[in-house]
Image (cartoon, rainbow, N blue to C red):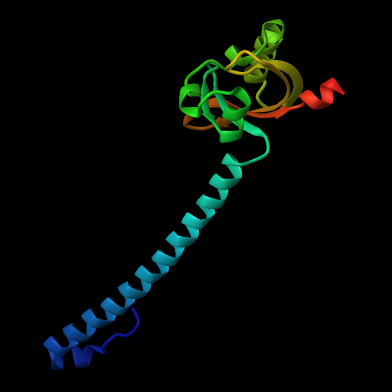
Length: 165
């Protein structure tokens, strides 16, 4: 407490003392409320920075479930795949892997899920929604959380220009 009343004063004027204690509590609560408000603003600003970093990164980011389904994908990733983000969620990531690379993708995916500590970096050909192809480098790592199923984090970089050079 900010201020307190001595015990002998507490016997003298109980109503005044109670009023004083309530005012002290009010001031303390006001200070705590202001501190919480500032902390909340700082958290919102940090969240906005991370959302901006995630959504507008120059490479695609996606998380893929153990079942191979897209859980999350940023705007760059949905742009690379040529499909609106809302239509990508819960779709198989393997749908966007070119036919000749599907077996390789499945083997790598299974290995990553079985050995989560290993980071993987590899290139393969991917399909856009309108059936055009592009070469991609995938940087993958499994993230294990105590109370949730493991997910695969994937960074997708279009390397078509490098591959064709």
